[in-house]
Image (cartoon, rainbow, N blue to C red; front, side, top):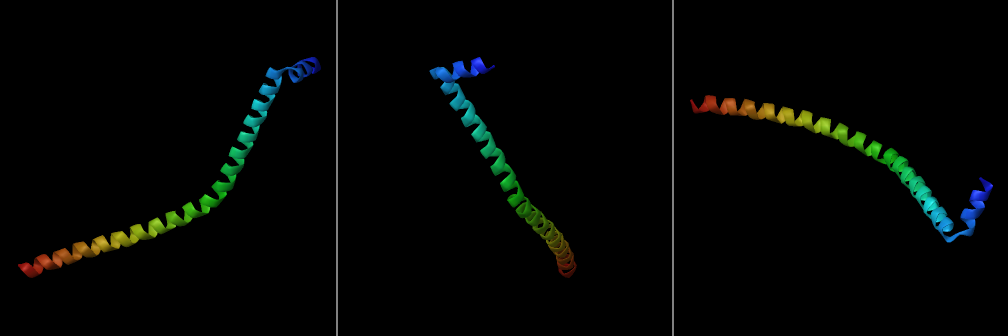
Amino acid sequence: MITFNTILAQTLAGTVIEIIVLLLVAGMIGYFTSYFYYRGIYRKKIHKLESDLKDLQIRNDGLLDQIIKLEKELEKKKK
């Protein structure tokens, strides 16, 4: 294994392969770091937006019920 590493270190192809491997590893580290960082940040925002959505859906249901009630009253007054 040591001879393989020394042969790779002495050739141009070996250095290119080493650079590519190091860049791939650095990219993977950066990707996973940003993924876990932003997951923590956006999880809070998503939770807040979901609770706001539930509140708005409840409010919307109440308004739809009021519309139905007012339409029935309007029909009664027209008759």
